[in-house]
Amino acid sequence: MNKNPIGVFDSGIGGLTVLREITRLLPEENTIYLGDTARVPYGSKSKETVERYSFEVSSFLLKHGIKMLVAACNTASAFAVPRLNAELKIPVIGVIEPGARAAVEATRDNRIGVIGTEGTIKSSAYTVAIKRLNPAISTFVKACPLFVPLVEEGWSNDEVTELVAQRYLQEMKDSSVDTLVLGCTHYPLLKDIISRVMGGGVRLIDSAEATASEVKRILAASGMLNSRNEKVNHRFFVTDSPERFLSVGRRFFGENLSEAELAHLEG
Image 1 (cartoon, helix red, strand yellow):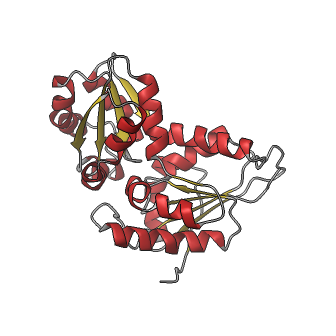
Image 2 (cartoon, rainbow, N blue to C red):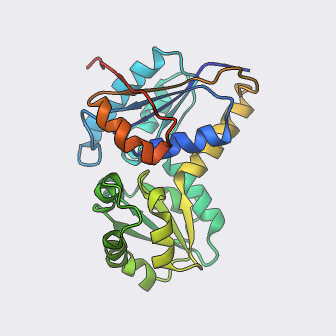
């Protein structure tokens, strides 16, 4: 048993969907979350910049004694996780590999769609991960940049958002995908709309759920699961504007998000 916290980071708020699934699946675990809100988004940054930011964030979390690091950001998962995994002495995972694995297991007709931010789609990380697992699978990708601001505006079930989803997802419907990866941590909040647009026959893959399952598997295999905890502690840090993080973040994590501390990273 290891009571040290699980460290989770994202460029901003979306990674809270990953944290929410981790705390749901592993209610005895302590966690510490850092949203790099001063430098959001990572998706428009270069690989070198994302790597540097990710190591600065990881250094902060390591000082708090984390036992595992989760990059709850698709861009950081694509650009920084390989180096983080190679250089850090604790387990490191991102959201792409678990999501890709879940999609490969779910597809019936070997036709998988992936939606995400422009940065994630341009990286081709999901396509590479899916093809590595099964080269016979056909992948179809689509950037949906308007989804993030719509979610953060609180319009997750708004008719405007549904119209945008219909426009974005028509290509996926035309391609007859049977499985659709929600390749951005904001997108789980749009599950209802995306499911309506795509139809009941399309399986939606929530990378947050798949990542939480992978966290549990790794901790169990290494004997680091915390099976008993009298007082679970969840700490939240941001690099800018705790007030906005709290007001928007509750849509992602729930009302238990009551306090956020300001983090000062060493560049």
